[in-house]
Length: 227
Image (tube, rainbow, N blue to C red; front, side, top):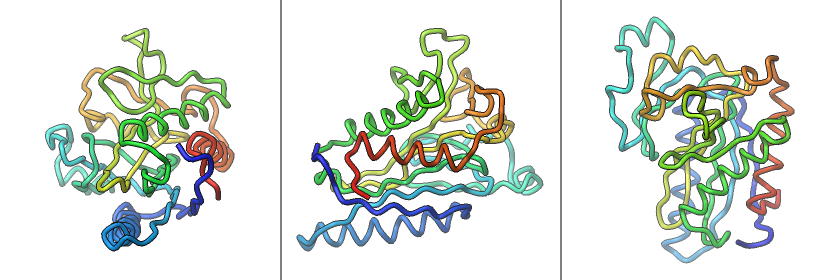
C-alpha cells in the first residue's frame, strides 16, 4: 500500500439514495474513462446519510424484504436494486454511509485487502468509543461478540462494487439509527443475526459529527488518505 494517496473528501449530508448513487456513478464512469484512455484517476471518500431506504445487492434475494410495496409506501421507505455486492440492507438517518471511490492500483490493493481495510477502519473507530469490533468468518462487515453466537450482532454493513480496480458503494455504520427498520428485512440475508448501533451499545445518543470525524480519521489512517 502506498504511504499517502491524495483523496478528496466530500460530505453530502442527508441525501436521497438515488441522488448519491448517481453522484457515485458519475465519478466512477469518469475514472473508468481515465483508465481506458491511460490518464490519471482520482480518489474520493464520500460520507452521507440517507432517507429511509432498503437496497438489494446484485446477488441478493428479494424475499429477504419482508414487506410489500404498499407497506413500504405507508412506512415512507424506498426500495432499490443496486449494482453492489451483498444482499439487502437498510439505510436511514443517524447512520454514517461511506462511499470510497478509489483506484485500488494507487493503493496497491486487491478487492479482498480493500474490504479488509474498510473493516479495519471501522474497528479502529469503534475502539475510540470503547467497543471491540470484529470480523466474522463468511460474512463481511463489522460485528460485536463474534465468539458468543447468541449475542453476535452487526454494527456496520459493507457492500462494494469493483471493476478494473475502481470501487464504489461502501459501508454503513449504525450510529443513532432507528433499528426497528431492520426487523422488516433479513439483514444481509441473515435470519439469525441481530443488528445494533453505537447508541444502543453505549446507552445514549451519540454526537453524530464526532463519530463522523473519528471514522474519517480512522479510514485515513488505515488507507493512507491524504485529504
